[in-house]
Length: 56
Image (cartoon, rainbow, N blue to C red; front, side, top):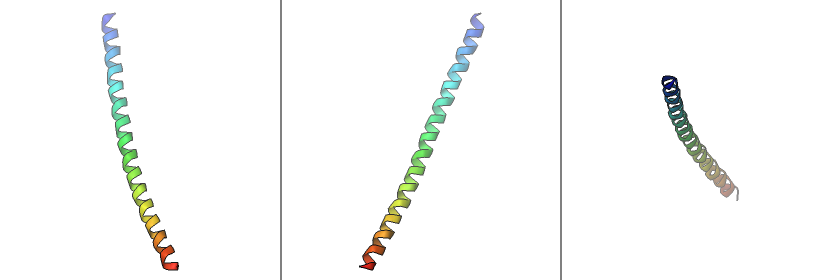
């Protein structure tokens, strides 16, 4: 009886570690994507401002 409980808790522990790693990886991916999007938007805004200034 004790053996099955140990195996179950060990499996649960491994799943918790995997879930934690997955969450961290997703967080870093979102951070990278966010930085790329913000950089792209910054360039786009600067480009639009240049166009507006040249039209005046």
